[in-house]
Amino acid sequence: MTKVAFCSDNESANQHRPQKTEGHRVPSCQPDPGMSTAPFDLDRCDIVSLLTMLDRVHDPRDPRGKTYSLSFVLAVTLVATLAGAKCLREIGGRIADLPQPLLAHLGAPFDHFHGMHRAPSEKTVRRLLKTIDVDALDVTFGAWLVAQATRNRGEQLALAIDGKVLRGAWSGEKTQVRLLSAMLQGQGIVVAQVRVPDDTNEITQVEELIKKLPDMPDRPVATLDAAHTQHDTADVVVQAGLDYILTVKGNQPTLERKTFERILPLLQEPPHHEAEERGHGRIKKWQTWTTNADGIDFPHAATAGVIRRDEFDLQGTRISREHALILTSTSGNRATGAYLHTHVRGHWGIENEIHAEALPVT
Image 1 (cartoon, rainbow, N blue to C red):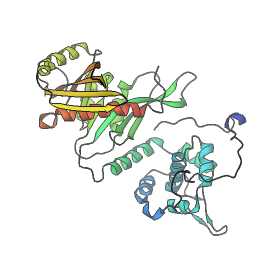
Image 2 (image 1 turned 180 degrees about the vertical axis):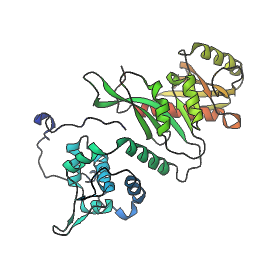
Image 3 (image 1 turned 120 degrees about the vertical axis):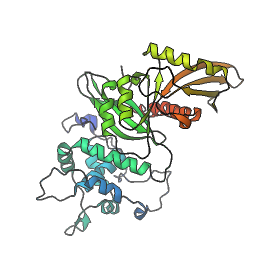
Image 4 (image 1 turned 90 degrees about the vertical axis):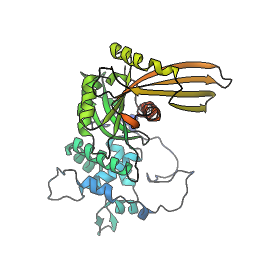
């Protein structure tokens, strides 16, 4: 987890002063107008595992005089962030607005003198976040997210590894903070991330990211774009106990030619997997072929494949055709056309999702 500069109390007052509106101040947990106004049943929300996870993080504070547990302060900070707080000042305001039943559910101490549950101030939250080991928190939180995402699931986990630029986070006057993240396909959940140093690129940080991945059941597969189709990256992924699915493009011309020669005869055969999608006035069709990777000199490559994507208008006239060359360390009956299609398309979807709140890298 990277440390991001929070908005400062010394910034321009006009920049952060809330607009004057009629009415009264409402809690951050106030339901949306279109939502049901029925009382929220806190007893149905099992957060024991979340609080237990937060308690595993080392508490850097002096045990003498502590009013709030570490798990409680982190939990209310998380709730405030999910409620839309973007800086420490806003986090403090959101926490102050949390209703008493929610504070009690999160483990707030009870103040018998005032007859209510207490909530930490912005100063308390700020002091804790400045001293806590954010990397340890990131790893612990990622492990908890994986545990929640894999409950009652039997299928193989797929991780999309991709980079993003954090909106509003700067490491210099003209340099934005970049992260390399691992996100669960189909879940939209980032389970690990590392800061990309300003003087290098994402390729150099794959090994560091892999080290931060929590334990996962079965043998997960990692999907990466063509920039990561490197010998060292393939070794790192497989040695960590994962399979890889990599796209082959012109940045590796020899590998691209060898892969193309291997799959070219397949295009004369019926596809091994087909899928079609209609929407936005277009018809999209995907056809996938796979074969073994014999003759392709790339670490741990077991299967080669190609995905052909055709796009038509509603009258059936082709608009475009693209081919994606694929290499994967997955072998045997598992490396089917459906397998490649599902995970490669899943990675393309993750690229859109992970960049939804990010600015393009220039």
